Image (cartoon, rainbow, N blue to C red; front, side):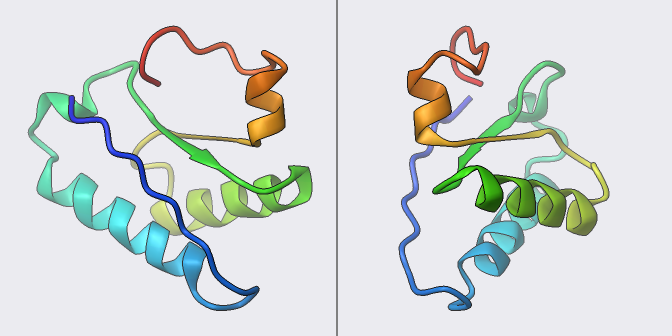
Length: 89
């Protein structure tokens, strides 16, 4: 599995979420037969805070219709150990 780190920064309403979702869908479609989408694997996506995390998770789920697993969290939740992640998520 290739691990990719991507930081999106921009003003509210600038299209960050739309671009991210488009990239996830494009990547998933191009790698559909790959081991990168093996059972038990998912994408880990951070949001700035809890409210943004909920909106991001809902938008990803609505757009992708659950075709692939995405875990959303905040940096603070990850640091506090609220996300159970063993190895690359």
